[in-house]
Length: 244
Image (cartoon, rainbow, N blue to C red; front, top):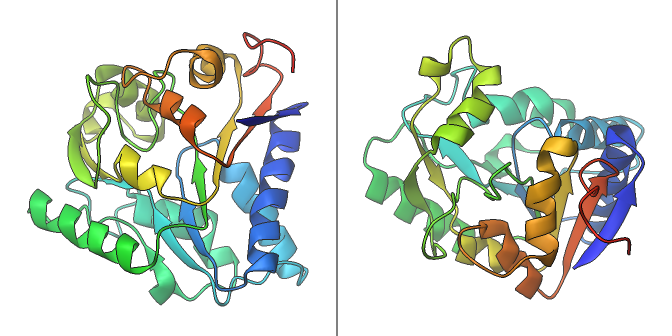
């Protein structure tokens, strides 16, 4: 794993955006795997700014998001469909027909997950997969478990994840208890993986991801086995890691 140390959130966002924009410039019709949550928002904002300047063209790019809450319609303000339009898609010249998010509105979990696996496989898997990391080491919504997951599946969110995500809802009880997420195996099929992390609350998870044992109790630790994984994190998130 290659670790890039950033001074702060803004520096982390710029560094991550540089890596993504380089991928788009080198392969204009690339496949990007995208993430939601507060961590990548600054990266998306930077990419939108460069797009407006004409430095990064998304017109041929296709995207596949990691996950979606089960039970939310695409136009629900708390859905990840809505999040992606609000934070990236509506601000760059991407064709919305080329953007994909698991169908949380489909109550048939098996059908929704199988269809998403088919779409991601047909696209050839991401050239670059962007990831955040949860406080408990989850990637996507792959929570700590006794095994690494494979394809897209329905998960029960842990209480710690529900609590962490409740800041985006009016009340904690409004947070959905289930989600559809790409599996760990699918994530590992990406040709490059980019992890972004900031803040002291992520320090233990980042240390476990980069330097701990490879174990499904910290799903992100499997990224140690990927041949092209870059971690961009600020000083606070790297505070428990040995100096590189």
